Length: 336
Image (cartoon, rainbow, N blue to C red; front, side):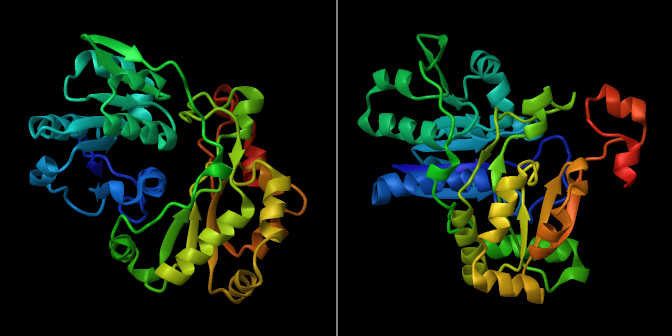
């Protein structure tokens, strides 16, 4: 089976601050899980239009074409999926936009054969098993899947959430890694010594679990889940040794939402990584809630990781606005 995964370009003229500078970890994670399961029984190609134009003429060469969709690139997904269907491929849609609107999409668009909601690693694996066996009756057992039967929108009978400790390290071999480094250098010509790479250490938000979250929360995962600390360091080493990465962006929304886990992560770092962090040859960039930065011992942990930048969700300098938005912090805490 020949499979194409595509991250189409935005269709609303919007962009984001790190567009084209970091690999699409979600697509790579799904691709890695599939390759570990099926080996040479499948062939996987990845088009990431953050760094390269998709070869639309090649759609005819694939049996299954899957698209990663945000709200910003959804129209492009529809355009590309229509073309893929015309070429005879099965089409799959995943990502945050269809996770929320799967039923609407399947009712109103004939260009998608399947929609996978939420985390896609295991659902896509099960879907590929069904397609390889050519047994459509098994589609009902594929978790998180929405599809049509006899013109009626149908959902599978099961759902699935990943145990992050069960997933392999996402392989970067499905993309041209240097394209992302080159884009970083174009955007930041004053940081030519930096070779960026990205990981994720956790999913979810402890503040949301505790309080219901900020009023504008768009996270889809429920609960907070962490990866194994030793596997993360293995991934850091892989990025360093194979791709010469010296700056790690952890894309997790709130790296410090569990102080015990974060302390374990820092204290478990291998000796070679510890030396590089201490010497300034390796660094981190993370996210955090403001209040956590004030807790005792956090600065020592950040210093041990050689954290060069912490992205804080401030949102407003007005206490009333912060309260109404359920941010759980005040202007005074932000200033401190």
